[in-house]
Image 1 (cartoon, rainbow, N blue to C red):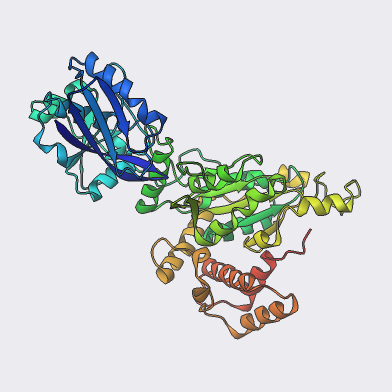
Image 2: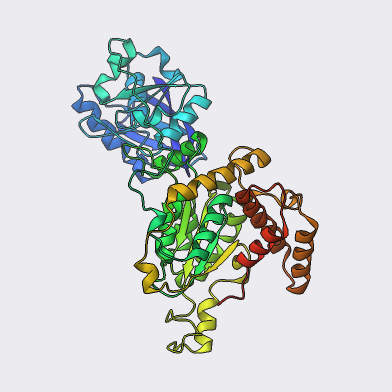
Length: 498
């Protein structure tokens, strides 16, 4: 007999539909799975066989062929065990389920027949809804996560033995409650008040947060660069519901969701030994990298000049487009990565800087050290903040302005940008055409034109200066960019400060 079931396989952070076709016919006993399965899918033969026997079902001693369609799509992971088992029971006459074709199934099976959670349950539930499925059957641990996808019934299944009762309606599981979306930063998050002194750095952080701009901090070790970066999420506006769902979908696909959605905006700080694939994603099948895990949040690169040159260069296109494009033979995948790049670097290998008399770095060493940051990537960083070592009086002084106070100004500036650009957009995401349509007062336009001619700025630097000036104007509540806002923007973008 022939039976079919619907399931899904993860492809990046998306779920692709898979049709499970099981044929049980006479012949030498065997169990074959075809359709480009990976090792985890092929091993489903042993898991399904043991689960059926241990749940009291009969494993048919016939020729069993499982086809995973479409055959041209690579299938990965153990999430198809439940669908294969259901289709095999139906094909062998042990399960009568008229609605099987309208139900999607996903989950891993243990040898005793219990279900185990799989990655990407949220993406799978959304794909099942878009594919017209009436319900989706998932392991009990995945059900609250999948319930975030509205418009589809989520059925929580704790074991394969309950499948016949579910099919006949004798057992109706309770509808799972969806995980609560945590939009703001969790309680007890680091506060910007811990950053003592550093007025220029605090201003740069506020401007970066208000417009979603990238920031590079250069200064000696211990000056507060890492401390400032770790406090940046506390002044960012809370996630919108749509953004929080995007963040949860990515965390789910990577197996990082657990029993709760991420609290607030992501903050990722990879080590400087990371590879290009680890930073922007890669592999077969393509897996998200740190850039995608930082989507709608912050990607912090500490000791920027210690990163591999090819890893840094891989960030150039994602910074412009907000997505990572991974090409493989016969296919191309796009992963979202709309993040804020925050980087910190020392001025030289020893960290003191050439202006310090104690610096012993040779000029060629300094040039080689700073050369890991190419001009093309530096041109894509909006703000450069020179960080000095704070004095003892500043460190021992009173606390600075709290994150709550700064966040109020940042939220007000973001609201102005959304009214102008549309929901969820900020100044850093303006297109060149939108940037050149910013309301400029004559003095501000003259100042930008003068610097553009004198310092031979690139067209990208010209547009980024406009975006930065617009953010400063939004923080000030101004309807147009004045000379003072333009001067501040050009000062924040200066590249000739050591």
